[in-house]
Length: 365
Ligand code: CMC
Image 1 (tube, rainbow, N blue to C red):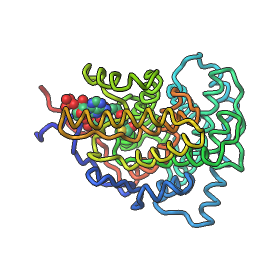
Image 2: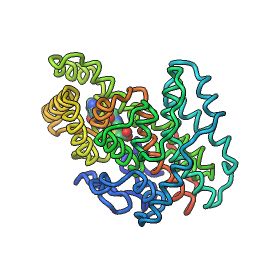
Image 3: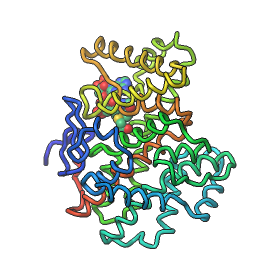
């Protein structure tokens, strides 16, 4: 039997046309386009690109955005379900259950035609932000806020969360966050989704697999971990001791390291710039300065311990952006999923289009 690779490190499991990563040069492309270029587009356009394989023209963009807006609403039955969740339930657990509910309410749930899958993809992308905002509000006994047609995908989410129309920079930050979170080749959640899709399970079930895998602190859960860490360092004077003590205890510092990138994660660079701009707009650079200090400590400590640096990944400065957007840590993973859902759908469709069940072997010991 082949040699076993722990954590499947370096194993190539499939061909994809959706994204490309060069972990040595720090390059990420969706459908052949650099992430730096994509970050300046709208989430609607990037979501269309991922799912349909091309940048939409003017008419396609308008049609797609209109369909997303028409599908933002969630039905009263789902709102009732959300209201019945016990206070304190983790947001991602509620989101997972809510996606199961919308699958139940979708009469095309178990229809597998390309048209049915396209309809489901629009419902999923459109409803994720409404669900995340509604479940957060209902956990405080508040009524959901109706989506606003005039606002972009990201701005509308912030509006539904707080009832306040975001500033231009806040809206831009949210759009960029969703774009940067949208896709990343065979990361753990996408891989688990592709396994589900490879058994010809339906799209909602596959997305739920993705959600369950994203939750873990070594994957999407790291974003919340970073926010918690920033809170725990109650005073910048203790930052170095805090980090060094964690490393001594062999604990991971959330938001650092990556299986694929051996250099700066290109998404982290964009997030860092957005975080800096938000800090300046807010007139308060506390979170940004604290994060930058942690980055410096980690960089130099790793050179000293291992002879090579460690860099922030996508979850590090995104957490700082959330701090400035006043997003509670409990929502961090669910918001990551709101962006990632487009990439998941693209992978689900790619798996269906050229399927063979994914079934590796285990080495019996
Ligand atoms: N803090 C402290 N030490 C670290 C870190 C970290 N963040 N990342 C890696 N290391 C050490 C690790 O302890 C290991 O040391 P040793 O060889 O002595 O056991 C060495 O570096 C190699 O790390 P690894 O965990 O074997 O690497 P991996 O490729 O299996 O895991 C990773 C990659 C991202 C899971 C890991 O770097 C990690 O746990 N980071 C913290 C959690 C995190 O930020 N996750 C987000 C991942 S990126 C985006 C996403 O998926 O959401």
